[in-house]
Image 1 (tube, one colour):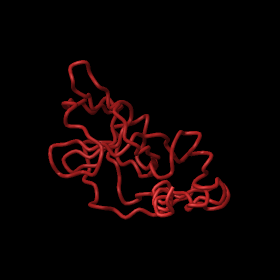
Image 2 (cartoon, rainbow, N blue to C red):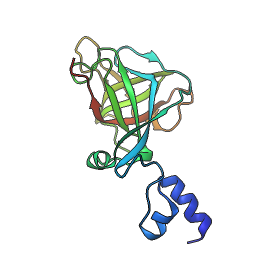
Image 3 (cartoon, rainbow, N blue to C red):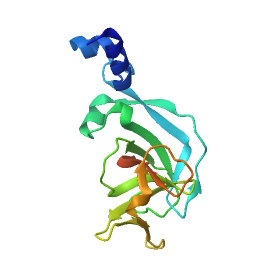
Length: 179
């Protein structure tokens, strides 16, 4: 492998070129022998309600978590972010103020608790595909009615303001305060 290729690949994977080529050396984002930094969008709140406008391009800060913890969840640091929940539509599963750890690695399955952008709103809902080519958008709180959208509207990537529903990630873990 060419040196430039190894350097670019190492940067994309969040590892040092030495680790990539020889299997030794620390990861670039380590905070100690077992810590890794993930992006925390503390100003972005995923609405668990009828929808809340997300901030345009919030700047994340790094929070450090155990690499073993992420591996136990099947997550890669460069495909993991954290943000907060606002609202009550996903209760009792998620409560306002919970922190969510998201897997942003794109997959073709639209099922489970997912964070997405629709009509400029950052939302967290349960997605359930149907046999008729639609996806049910479900709140766990019965006070909020389910919605249905054609599966062709869903995609991964950057929100573009069109009619697409842009999936940001699937909820892998919830951090909830005891009080």
